[in-house]
Image (tube, rainbow, N blue to C red; front, side, top):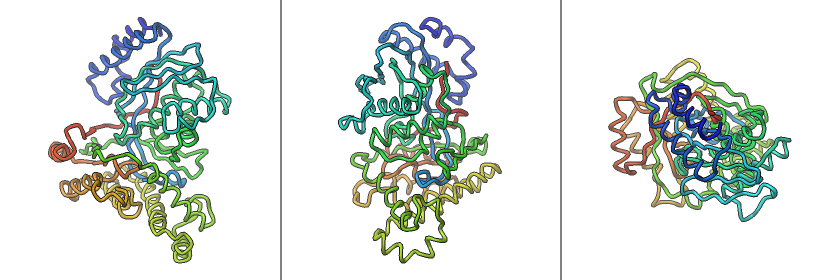
Length: 425
């Protein structure tokens, strides 16, 4: 739609049912103002054209901490907190992407080669996604985009994957007639992150964001992951999902994240496989002494043990969700958190004795919640966010506690939305 028609559509009631699903709330008046403000600013920057609104959610990992890169099982959900972009194509074969004060240089798509100076930048992701689309036979081209991000960097709900999948959807809408399905969108985003951005991530974040809803994913065959969606809600059982940003120092942690899959793969190699999912816990235990002597890394051994137990837990969590068994699910989520802390060891880097914010947050949750609800490290770990499943009557109390320690802006109260990254209009 052009600027005037799109503005009229947002003001009308036609869009109301869709927006209620996006934000998981009945009161959408503020959301409409957000859309109108973004559209007006895009018109000022880029002029008129055929505009689209695209929404890409954050994600919450429910179970399967660091299992995806070993072809295991995960449980995840797309959230009601999103990045919203208004976009239109241009004829310059250049991407202009603006997002508040976040600076992204224009990217000339005439050159899709990897550039060393762009590693760990948004520009690398844009270039990498365009390259991957081209290599797969899809079209790409320039566009003008203005984004308002609520999936904030460092918030623990995967801002990078949110950005990547949104970029793929922009190219999908503008140049490929919506032919790219959610699974391929996720894979293209992961390719750009691995190859151009330089981060050896798994596929969990991109897949949960691209598919959305409450999903379980079996990565045993990563080229064809098995995905199941469930109509499940914590709030229906009297619990709320809260993420707490413990505001630790994220600087210089890339090597910590990279060490997790690298160490686990060192154990897999001694088992004669590329990924732990291709072997078994029984084989590891039967050859534990010999493998330990060859690997010469006890943390790698503990991380391998975490994988096998966590992978089994994720399957059990899927069954608990399928059976609507909230008590079993909460128990398994707490066990997942304990394993991440003790075996996976991704709550804090071993060298940081003065900065262990995640551990502090988990300790406070343990003391306050006791046997009620659940709490665990959220996502990659080391610094960042913890996940709380809190009885409704305790939300106010634990919120005060966490805010008193980590600041008034540390809380993210979110809900699960029924779809992933989507071109809304």
